[in-house]
Amino acid sequence: MRAEGLSDRKIATELGISKSSIRAMSAEPTVDPADRSDVARLAHQVWVDVADLAGERFVVEGDDIPSFERMAAHGIEPAFPASLGHADTTSREYVQMTTGERILVFSQSRWSGFPDQSVESGWDHRGSYLVHRCPGLEPGVCAESHTVIRPADLGLDDGVEIYGSGWIDRKPTAHQVWKLLTAAIEECFEVFDPSYPELELRRRPGTTLRYPIRAGRRDAATEVGRTPQS
Image 1 (cartoon, rainbow, N blue to C red):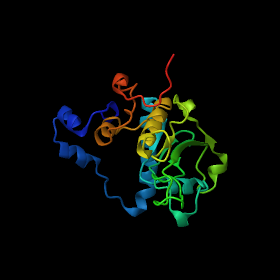
Image 2 (cartoon, rainbow, N blue to C red):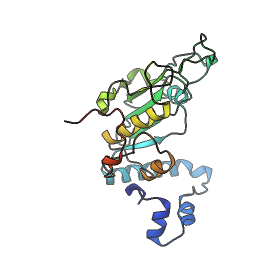
Image 3 (cartoon, helix red, strand yellow):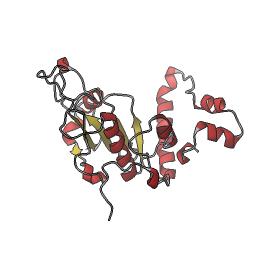
């Protein structure tokens, strides 16, 4: 029901139970440490089966780590030394459940851009996001096998990956750019995530609706930077 975009409240109404019961059902059960590997294997298989039933093989890895940690996991060299700071922007990763292929969305810069000692703040407020395709995660060493996915490959205009207030022309914030790119990726690659779009619309209203085509709400979506369709 979440895959159809229903919120906990709507699911509870349909099932005739309380909203708190829905949350209780979602709670992670206590697992004996000796059984953790089996639980992880079964959980992975559930994701594969559900994605297969939905006809969608890419699933969301998560938003729980910033860009600099995501880069380190793949062995991507940072653009500036850690002594000057970290790329603390939001990142996301998608996994193709059959092949292990991954798509990464991250930034080499902070939300405030790159280090710049010539300005009072110490940052130039000029940043951009990158989208990489990874054939398979090899912790710390697979960056050499990555290829770049350009905005045009996602149906977006060139330049939509740029953010920050340090440019001559007005640019969106880092989070707005992240939302635009992830929404475009999730449309193009038919990403499966049972918590969206309802959760995203509720907690992060902003630049573009998630899955506007499949949710039947393209007219309501804010098509920021999207290439006109012929």
